[in-house]
Amino acid sequence: MIDRLDADRRLLLVHAHPDDETIFTGVTMARYAAEGAHVTLVTCTAGEEGEVLTPDIAHFAAEHDDRLGQHRVEELAVAMGELGVDDARFLGGMFRFRDSGMQWGPDGHAMPRDVTRDDTFWHADLTEASDELVAIIREVRPQVMVTYDEFGSYGHPDHVQANRVATYGAALAGIASYRRDLGEAWDVPKIYWTAGSRRLMRESGWDAERLPRFAVEDDDLAAVIDGTEWLDRKVAAMRAHASQIAADGHFLQGDMNRWAHEYFRLAKGTAAPAPGEQWETDLFAGL
Image 1 (cartoon, rainbow, N blue to C red):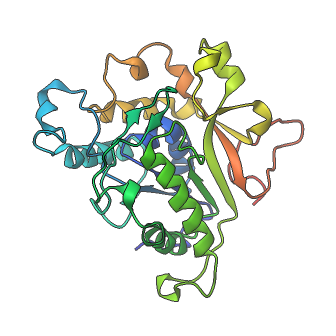
Image 2 (image 1 turned 135 degrees about the vertical axis):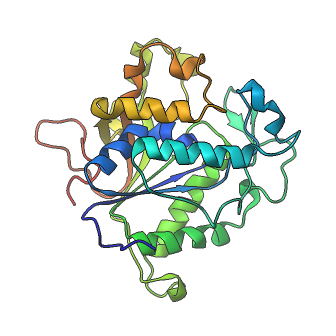
């Protein structure tokens, strides 16, 4: 257990699978870790159902040896080393909740599979899963928490469930009379959802009719983290997730500067942009 008071700023992130943390929030994590904040990553599953993009471990896939989860745990550890984060945990412990998998729906968004195993995160009891997060929130006592929007950014059932668990877990953690055995109550002051700018994504070449749901109008954004200084760490962490992010694929080809800025919506708390600025440039602003 960490000393919950060992850092003035404490950031907690709730992600669904190994690699999500780097893609959505890699420079944010690297920045705050480098600045001395305590960064805690909670990953909800080991990503057992992911597609294997590395040919020499194709047999790790769920439909073959079913060893991908352990491999992705190892990739995550390397990625966290690249980002400088030393407090990475799995919700309820490693392999407590299994990756639910997904399929693409007719609208182009991800959706649950027609048949999903009973032990998957998608089928987890919401209170049971949230209680695991309550214990972490009350231990770490973060001023800022980050997760996905209610659509899980692009519809993946585990991302949707991560939003539900983060939202309910944060609410329960702040109730003094709730599950005193899980620690002293803590109300998280600011909660953010990962997001993107529709305007900037259109300007960069995205088809306006095929933008993901996490892309919102600029007025709905609250914060942007300029991670240019830490971009090399994010790219290195992406490369560490080689089973999911192919070296010759979209994520690691082209202008890497597109990964340098990460955008957020404010789900709880009060936005505090600097005078004359449209958005916050520090998630701890106003605290």
